[in-house]
Length: 428
Image (cartoon, rainbow, N blue to C red; front, side):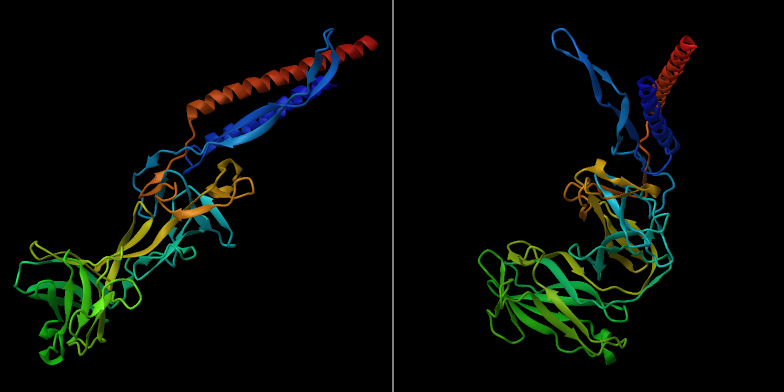
């Protein structure tokens, strides 16, 4: 009888709704858990006749579960007693993880820890993926790799400086020599101060002289300084560099073929026995413009940068809002990678897995990967975890509604059972 089938569909749908609510409530303390809602839709209708005006007379066949939609809204943050390996996403996106079988998954759960190799991993051992860094420089064009962080107490080997730059202005009205110093490291990790002395010889023309202190060399005898000439245009822009005894104007400064971008400096016979210190004095900034100018302002250095590092011991690490992972050493800091995030076109199409992980499907679309804070992706909050977004008040309200629906369908079944029994009794 259809009278039995119809309430049975309601019981099945209500059971699914009750299971969904129970799952939400059981995960209300699960990190970054996203609540779900069961949605119903009616089944097909059977036409049993027509009215006198030709309107169809239809009888429904019950209900069904049309979807279990997931609420991907942001959960609140928990920052109490979290470690530096814990993190939360502020906005859109998912962490990218790779399990032990090499399969890629996505999660909002940022409760990571370090394994014995220093890799950041989830509680089930999946590797957190991101962009690699070489000598402290992140390459966002490289394939994703596991984010590995030095463990506490791990020794960082020294690295000799290869490149340094200086942002400075030379006073166009000054005739005095202007010394500027930048700190660099040799292959043993010892620090040296390279002094670049600028001296104006004519309007728009300055000589440079690069040297280390005599005490830095074997026997305390310093070699002749490395010299050359800098030429500036009428706007104070560095335009040409002549190295050594070459007469100005020398080579044009720029990025075109044949232009000069850096001045090579070399210091051998260091007193501590380190390898020859070969340096590139970079003349251009990130935008391809010279970092040294000459205008009518006091000569000054506004900043210097140099790679390389001394030996040190790891004391911890931090994670920036853009996902940059920076290891902290007793000798300084070094960027070791950048966490990548992913987002999908249709989040409802994701395939839910255990351990708070998701996998993409044809319905969700492929993942769009990028750095935190770019392309609509959220930022990363260090030493915090995202709480579940389960609303206990709403869940209890939905629980009452689902319970009443289940009771009503149950009552319909027992009522139809009574009607069927009375029908049988009429026959006998």
